Length: 219
Image 1 (cartoon, rainbow, N blue to C red):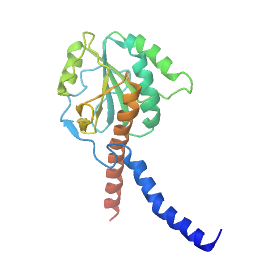
Image 2 (cartoon, helix red, strand yellow):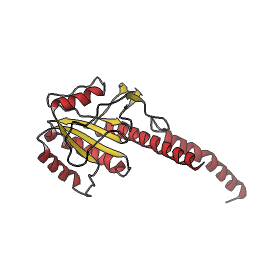
Image 3 (tube, one colour):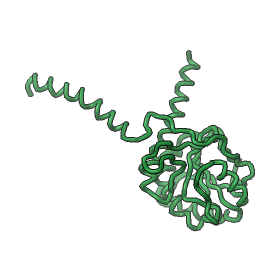
Image 4 (cartoon, rainbow, N blue to C red):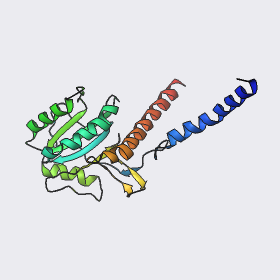
């Protein structure tokens, strides 16, 4: 290869590579931006029974779902979320899943957990199943202040991103719905094309905030 050709190749790489990197990161709609706060002060989970230590929304990044009495038809939703979201992010210290159910489904939850562990043996430590009354579920759901509704079994296919201040995060400029409050867990396409991107954004937001905090402490 001649000297001039080498020089041309190097210049091309120096010009093209940054452009490629920019396009890669810019491919996600919400990359490099904070996920908007749509609702403040989501109701607490203090009235719910847990299968272990108390569960709170504060100081956690939470994927919140409402399964009511419909656990028997939520296996598909659970598997979608487990494969596409949970397995990617459960190792983040402050990340958790919280699914709200009506009392009396504890045994069914154990069967679901067995299904989720199949294959690679997923660590389900951050899958939290909480049990309460229909009124308890409705109180938390209503506090989200969305146009969505729970069905007759107290469930919805939508799951929601809740930040460390117990605020609902979502999109206020979604190309399909305008305001995107939650993500349909029945749709692998929606999980892949929207939810995955938004979870990355909020985790990146808190990681950057932590780095800044640590840097400021060292000054």
